[in-house]
Image (tube, rainbow, N blue to C red; front, side, top):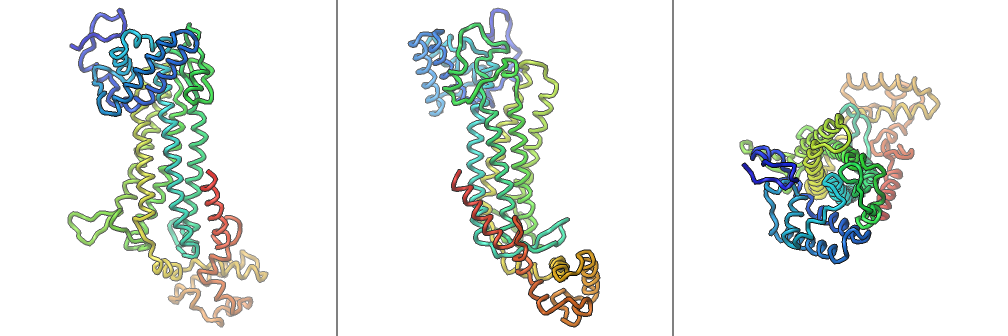
Length: 462
């Protein structure tokens, strides 16, 4: 049997060793230690500010907490399973350092509002880190786009060749996705940045605390208005996991495209040795491990979101031990998003090279300029639907003859419709097909350069 736990004299026996291990969270919530120390320092200062503790007592507590911080950073504070969780571990060590004064730290506080505070401080910091990593990812996209405004790549719908587009336009689509991710995290951060400290176990406290004072010390924008809600709310964590899932969706979509582009069938990119591995049996292979891993890790984050939704759906107010399960999901999702962003940023920056000759050939070997033939006729007064049907017949007969549209003679064009002139050949060149799409947000080169300028402004003003 284990030693008796320091709950209260309500308990006479000890936990069964297996139950103690099952119950403990110290193995993972040690991740929160810096935030636990910061929150405890703010709580101690608030207790002195309100006269609940003397200034001298609070100073001793703060000094002891800072010493624990230094011990932890130096690798000298490594609490074991006997401490159950990071909160008890800190309090136990604090009492060893400052004596009975350490036992006063928990005055007017419960582990319920304490852990809620710690998790919010942790997630607030991590959101800031992830937003910076999104900016790094966007900068690489902008750099690549700037060098490829007039590089053309086949655009697809239904994974079928549709219309050629500027490669920069394609890359900037991911910039826009990442910008939504960045903004979304900023909105969620505001809902993370609310203090539950002082909510107590569920009903507040009889002590004359000042919740706004401690919240201000910790940089929280406001406090929870309802103590029951304060200790049991995990909406902010679910919102974060939803946003993290969307980040992974966007990274995974790009990863899937890179995997396709790197295949022999596409051959749009070549992978550098710094971001690819080989086969253990097939010496000719170079595998796109980075995008494949990102694509695979996406499911982990989706799973954490589903797990936390399921965890919360049946919990009555207020705190329940089930909520201990939120941390590992949150910690792993944060880590997965961060390493995936870093890996994809490196991959784009130095892990692959676009094969411009292959791209140029790709946009010249299909019928992706068919819509432009219809547009050509429409501009000459032919109703679009009539032009659309006519071009469909042209494609059909050209396929049967083994020709592309560019291979038709002027006589063949005019036999289809008298509106065709010599300028049809220029109108259907891939470069002109792209350049002509100059509507706002389109792939026309003028629009792409404007979009690049806007993207740079976003990065410079943030």
